[in-house]
Image (cartoon, rainbow, N blue to C red; front, side):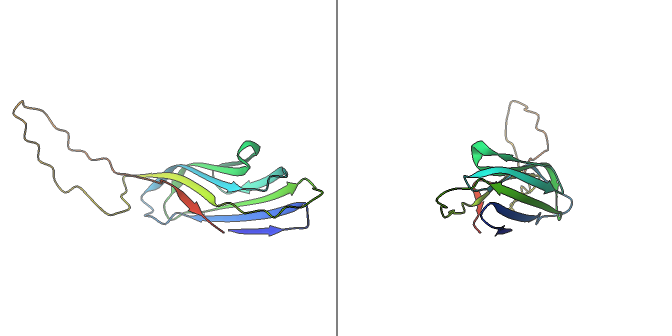
Length: 142
């Protein structure tokens, strides 16, 4: 991630995301929120994957990807135009928020080897386990 200020009215953002898990898996419901300054007027966004747009109510560029393959690299480049201000305020640069799920993957490596059900009523069991990894509160500070 890199952010460069181009004068008083422009900011350039470049973001590269790498999926650091097996190429046989994929992440779903990926949402990356890149904060922008409060005085943002508009943003020109180019991304290699998914959809990205500037959402003024969140003061962020929100990048959504439905399926993000493992070992893949995705890029986002944005040129943000700022409204000129009389008194420029220092921007605190809030963290980038990332939300995602990775089905059939456990980050801890825990796997169910066997499960035995003792039930006298003749309950029929299905031999199936669903693993899922879900990002709780993942933030990146630059």
